[in-house]
Length: 226
Image (cartoon, rainbow, N blue to C red; front, side, top):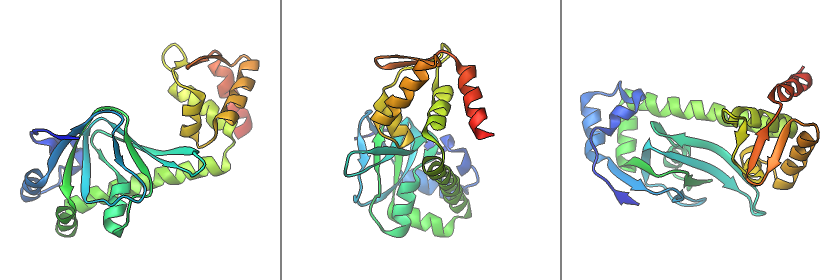
């Protein structure tokens, strides 16, 4: 990870528009802009957190990995967002409970914990920014828990295929990658995909899934959701 020069990176965070001029100057003066390539592990379970990160550009995947190797993606952080896992660690004085991996090359601004705490206590605009992001992401995580715990995998898989297909109806991905996204295991995902293929809804090839009959997948979801 390397430092990089920066202009007014705050302009990329619309939710920070309410900050006072003094607060903006404090962030720019204390913020250290960094760059790192795709694949960089930003944090791991148990690691201490000493900085609050503003992701300027790129994408970071936050995931949990069980002892048996099973993975689940909790959420992604995109440019103009912050990571609530980092927020929670700083506020609770605890280590990370998940892993953060850069999916693309990225740029981020890091401010020290002392600056984060100072602004959190003194700046209404900064508090609103932090807690709004926290609340929004927490709602997303609650929805994820509901999906994994209570919704059938075949319905979630059908939804995933429909939402992530390209204009030609294809997804360049693997069964393992889908399993990670859905909080399942590759063998189960493969079994459901094979059933979809048998019905003619999808076509399967190495590293690629084609949605052949999206309308029938949509009908399938509606029939079981009714």
